Image (cartoon, rainbow, N blue to C red; front, side, top):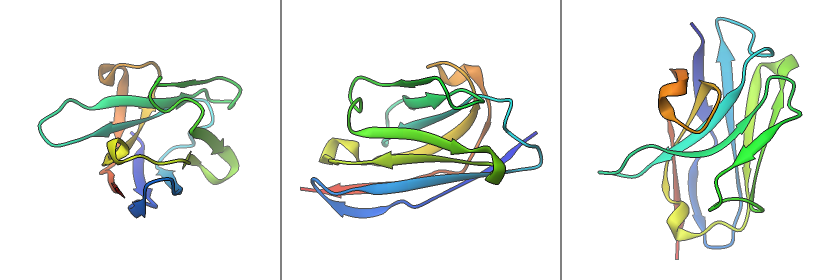
Length: 120
């Protein structure tokens, strides 16, 4: 099992940027895909982005493509989500997870989440 801890959330104005971090412990994650999801109250947890173990393959939800970038530093056992040009509809709790694909059921370890709030 891998323990994941997200950080970097906060309050930002429309058009601003935030960088989220996800630090893993308990196992090195270099051979695993990692993903970012987000969730708002009363809604399902939605896929945001994913990155392969070697960092060479990435996928994004259409809603964030061109604005968000997922990268990883396997030496630091950390995955990042750089978010630019933020919009109020990006407001959510953001989770990182270990796995691969766009479905939550494809992920086995989850962090506790970090709140991102974008003000209009």
